[in-house]
Amino acid sequence: MKISSEEFQGNVLEGLDPPEQDVVRKVALAGNTMLFSEKTHQQIFDDMLSGGGELADNLGNGVANIMLLIYGKSKSMPRGALPLAGAILLANAAEVLDKGGTPVDETTFDDALQTMTVKIFDRFDPEFRGKVAQKTGRQVPPRNTGQQQQGMPQQGMQQMPQGQGLISQAGM
Image (cartoon, rainbow, N blue to C red; front, side, top):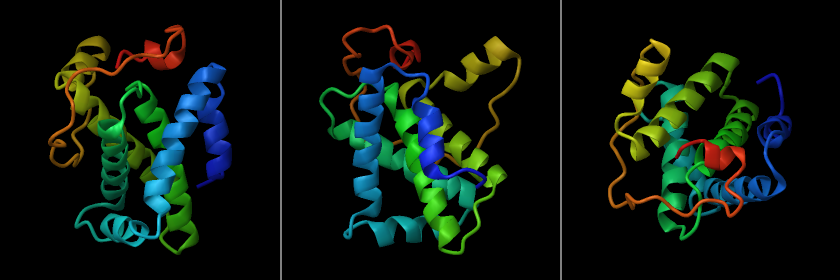
């Protein structure tokens, strides 16, 4: 990748209000804790590298699964934080893979980001792809987004108290 994961995180957080930045940072930290813990690190990265598909799909699905797992365990996380924190986690994972000898170029990263985002949005809005097509006139290309998570709560979580920021405007 052309920029570091730290620079990428700064770009993601740049347009958010301070309370939203805090939420996204906390969710990304929870994801990093899961991704890089002694107990799970090797298994997660092995799955990403040997998942039987393209690296972008495995990377995007892996990060989406982590975000959905964290959301499922949360009592108050706004859903709008998931794609933003997931993007940060994805940049961290891509940087680790890249430094470890598995190249993650811009196209792979972009495809992984698309896979992760589509999986997260599809999870909460099964008509997401149709809505995008209706509003833009373009289809969301199908990617290997795997099976929908089972056992995740269907109802929305509470939004940020001020309700004015980008996370609450995400419509998730």
